[in-house]
Amino acid sequence: MGVMEKMRNSTASILWVLIFSFGLLWVLADTQVFDALSVGPQSLGQVNGDEISFEEYNSRVSYYTDQFNQQTGGGMSSEMRSLYEQQAWEDLVAARLVEQKMNELGITVTDRELINMITGDNPDPFIRQQFQAEDGTIDRIALRAAIESPENSEVWVMIEQQLRENRRQQKMNNFIASGLRVSSLDIEKAYVADNSYADIRYIRFPYGDVTNDEITISDRDLRDYYSNNPSQFERSESYRFRYVSWDKTPTSEDTLRTVNEVEELRESFAAAEDDSLFLLRYQSEASFRGNYTHVNEIRGEYSPVIDLEPGEVSDVVMINGDPHVFKKIDQRGDEIKFGILTYNVQADAIATIDRLAEEADEFQYYASSDGFTEEAERRDLQFNEASATKNNPVIPGFGQSQMVLNTLEGLSRNDISDPIELDDQIVVIQMLERTPEGVRPLEEVRNQVENRVRNQKRQEMMSQRVQNLLNESSDFETIASAADKEIQTAGNIRMSSSRITGAGREPKVVGAVFRMEEGQQSPPVAGENAIFIVVVDELDMADASQMSSADRREIQNQLEQEKFGSFNTVFIEKMKEEANIKDNRSRVLR
Image (cartoon, rainbow, N blue to C red; front, side, top):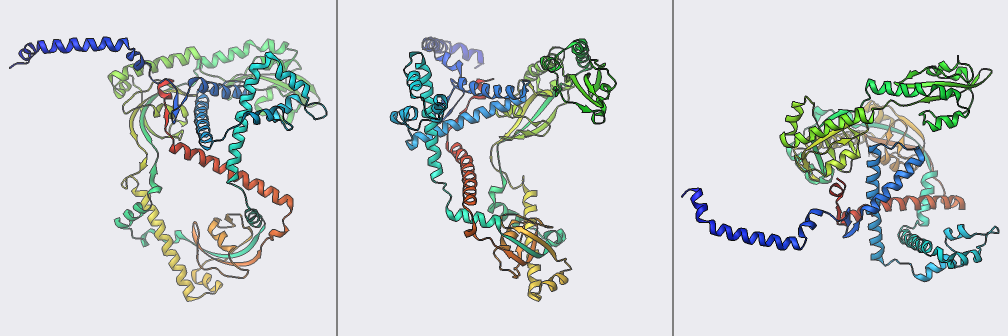
């Protein structure tokens, strides 16, 4: 039976299916289910079900942007903004996690506590700052008037909310700090470590003296090492991708345009009475310092200012590709005060950047339907391959680029990105492969495993050689002579240090030194790069009983800060690992 005949015989069944389907569609349409499906995620993300809204994310990004503009005068690059966007997301996630932990621990601030923070004998520093009288006391009358004033009601709601949150966070910090207290023994150990010194002599037997020809490595050795050390070969999620790029290097037209802008301001610069205000108003890249500089100290490229008359402005001078004009403001003897008007040559936002962006848009459109490599070849565009790792914005070929990393995290295999405008180029990316996190296969890390097994065997062989020398003679000088090694000296080695003069970083050896007695010779000590035999010539151990009260307080504060900082970092990361975090940024912000 042919296909058409089968369809004719099935017409009645098909019609009933269609009728039922259209009826179901009408019912679903009335429930607005399709509107809900088309809207997509309703929030920027979630942390254990607690939503992060676009509004608070945007507010946090705006805060960072405003701070940057105030500090630098503006001009934030798209790459810098991307870094701040990532930081804003991390801030909000961390804040949710801490808030949830405080709820879990039952950390609250009662209304009575809040009242005491405002009107108590020892009010919050914010209240004290706002209502402190000249004699240092709180102006209770002004405080009461501010509280009872009807027009301040909304302001007080905000103040009370902030005070409550601050006190709650302080309680959380106190809770954490209570488990991180520094004991007297910790303080004494730190004092002794910072104030104890040793002078030593040592013989160094580098692992590199064992040649590769002396080492035999079997497949069994590799498999055993790999199986016993899986954590050494863990990888984060990674991405392999290809990309095409359009260079945003300014054209000759861009350079000419910038030169003309500077040239057009020459006369106004010469006529300006307040040179500092003029350069600020016209946003010169060179800020006005207003000091006098001796002619012998003026940089060579700034020499045109020397031959000018006071008030005169030079012709346009190109320095490092950017146009400059100099104005001699004043001269006293051999000292000159001058100002510089200059702009960086940048690609024109319309004539150059828009043209490149349009080319990138067209490429992305046709590449999505005709194929990435086919469209690149048709347009005679070179495409490159690169790889990146999640949470590591340093990407070969791009340097540090949070924007590229964010884009990669939102792409699936074979997806082609929208054009990405970086500081120096516009790129379009195609995802080739996403590799999930986990332990890398042995074949992929075989060379690394082999190197580590070789180093391990090298260390074992050198350790045995040194032990054989000791078995023949325990005399320090005899050992050095038999091994044809030089006896080296190192003085004033601090117990808290990790370095030895002439040997580099060797924390295990330093630790061994301060477990010895003066005049004692050590057994073989396996260091980072060699086996050591050490003789302690002089040992000056500090006495903790000589520590002053100021020393004790300083060490305690330092240890508490170190512990608290280290714990906070681990604390947040641990909570992230255990949390259910949904990141919808790639969908909501696209």
